[in-house]
Image 1 (cartoon, protein in one colour):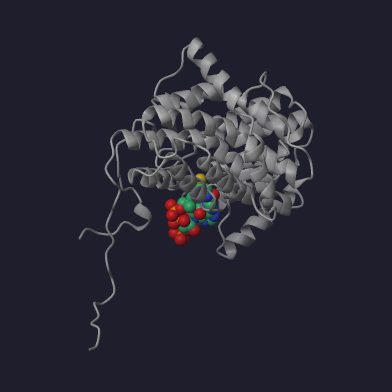
Image 2 (cartoon, rainbow, N blue to C red; image 1 turned 180 degrees about the horizontal axis):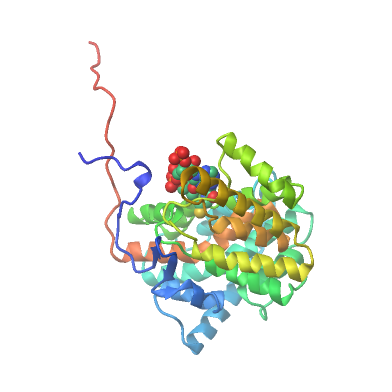
Length: 373
Ligand SMILES: CC(C)(COP(=O)(O)OP(=O)(O)OC[C@H]1O[C@@H](n2cnc3c(N)ncnc32)[C@H](O)[C@@H]1OP(=O)(O)O)[C@@H](O)C(=O)NCCC(=O)NCCS
């Protein structure tokens, strides 16, 4: 049997047309398009690109956006599931429960045809942000807010969360967050979703697999930990000692390091600019300056001791952006999921379209035993 690659590092397990990462140059492309260009499109166009494989023309985009608008509202039964959630949980747990319930209501639950899955896709993409916003409001004893069809996907989320329209810069940051969070090649949650899809299980089950996998702090859960860290550090000047103590205690700093990027994660560069713009627009730069001090301290520490830097990953400055957007930490991973849903669906549909069950091997390392007569 071949050598075991711990964590499947650098193991190529499938071919994809969904996205590509150049970890040396720091380039991320969705369906061949650089994210530095895609970030100026509406999320609706990017999600269409991911799930259908091509950019929409004006008419296709108008139809797709209208469908998302139609499907955004939760309806009484789904809203009641959100209400029934135990609130000592993260929004991610409520999302998992609610999507599972939504599957019960779908007469095409086990229909894995492209047509049925595209219909399920728009429903899921439209409803993810609504579920997260409703969870947050119900948690605070507030009534959920209905979506506003005049607003973009990102602006609508902030509107449903707060009950008031976001500023232009806040809406832009949220839209870009959803785009930058939408897809990232064979990350753990997309791979996990594909494994479920490869057994010919239904799309909801595959998406729930993605939710469960994204939740962990070594994956999407890092974003919430970054927000908690920013709350723990009392002032930008305290950041250096804080992270150096963690490093001395052999603790990881959340929002740093990556399996694939050997250089700056291109999403981080965009998130950092957004964080700075939000900080300046609100006249409150403390979190941004704290974040920069953490980044600079870790860069110097790793360069000095290991001769190679430790870079922030996508969860670091997006966590700072969420602070400025007043998104509560317990919502952070679910907001990430509300962007990533398009990527999960794209991967699952690719898997269904040319499927072979994903079933690797393990090397047994314990002795064989015999039952005594
Ligand atoms: C992303 C991550 C899971 C990648 O894991 P990986 O490829 O298995 O890399 P490793 O965890 O083996 O890290 C390699 C080395 O860098 C160090 N390192 C990596 N990320 C680190 C971090 N965030 N803080 C401190 N040290 C870190 C590790 O301690 C390890 O050092 P060692 O060789 O002395 O043991 C890892 O960097 C991490 O746990 N980051 C924090 C969680 C996070 O932000 N996750 C979001 C990912 S987008």
